[in-house]
Length: 141
Image (cartoon, rainbow, N blue to C red):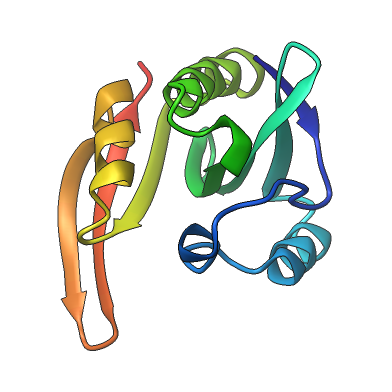
């Protein structure tokens, strides 16, 4: 897997998955307005664009996995798990990352499966009006 700096999400997702992420316009604005703390990457498997990842540095060497998605034409082929595993190693190697956190919407069993498969562990659940998310962390040490 290869990670190339990006300024926008270029992949296509099924509608139900796209609704779980920020819009492409919002992602573009997030990247533009936060150049010191936000990094975005296109994910390539050999020479083919297969995904997108956006992280936010919230503390030195600690990153929040804000958006992670695999193009609809590359889903259900284990590419998401491989890409996320490779990305974690990339962050450790290139940015000296020691921790990565993320969330998923409660009930999204696919996201839960992928995150747990690569080593994320549940830290807590946010259950408030309008928000039911599971927080997870991966410790890279």
